[in-house]
Length: 245
Image 1 (spheres, rainbow, N blue to C red):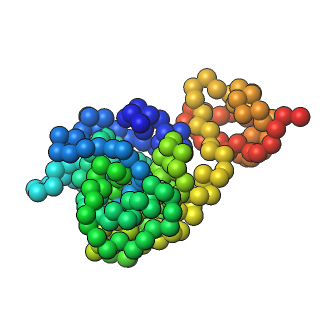
Image 2 (cartoon, helix red, strand yellow; image 1 turned 120 degrees about the vertical axis):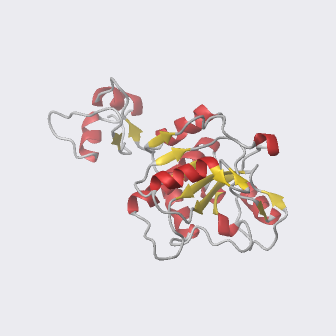
Image 3 (spheres, rainbow, N blue to C red; image 1 turned 180 degrees about the horizontal axis):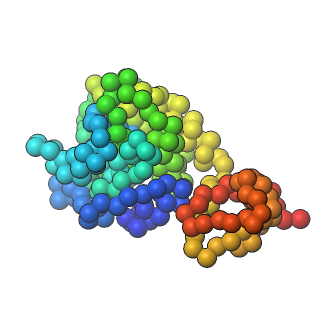
C-alpha cells in the first residue's frame, strides 16, 4: 500500500486526517526492512496535550528517533499522520503472535520478544496518560475503531489483524483503559456494515443514490435530512441496505 492509498483508506472511513511535514517519506527504512505488513497495532502515548504528543511522535526523543508510529489519534478524534514506512513503535515481540495475526487466529499469550514488529505492523499512538484514570473520549475510541477498520478493509483483513502493544511484547500495558477484545468487536461490526460515504465536492443525493443503487429518499431518511436536503463536502452519510425498486 502506498502512502497515498493509506491516506485514502483513512479518509474513506470518514476520519478527519491531519498531515504533518514530510510524513509520506518520514521513516526508519534505512535501519531495517518495512513489510510485508500483516496488521494494525494500537498504543497509548503516556503523554498529555495533543500538539506536544504529535511532535514527540513525529520527532521521537533521545535514544528512540521518530517517527514513533504512522498515525497519532488525539483525544478529539483526529488522526495525525507523522510517518509512513518503518517506524519505531512495536519493537521486538512474540513470533507466535505474529503467526496468529497472519493466520487470523486467536492470539496466544505473548511470552517472547524475538521478532521485529516494526516491519510487520502499522502503528497508531493514541493520546492518553495510560494510568487507567485518564478518560478515553467516545470520539477517540471511534477514531481508533475507524482507523483499524480502514486498514483491515483496504487489505482484506478481519478484526483479528488488530492487536494491542500489550498483546505483542511481554511487559507492555498499552493500550490501558479499554480492552482490545472489545475494540476488535467494534472493528468486526464496522467491517460487516457498509462503510459510510464521505461527500465529495459536486455530489448530491441523486448522484450518491445512483452510486450505491439506493433510493435517495432512503439515504435522506437514514441521515435525518429534511427538505431542501442539503449536503456538503466532507459530510459522512450512512448508506442503508436497501435497493432501488
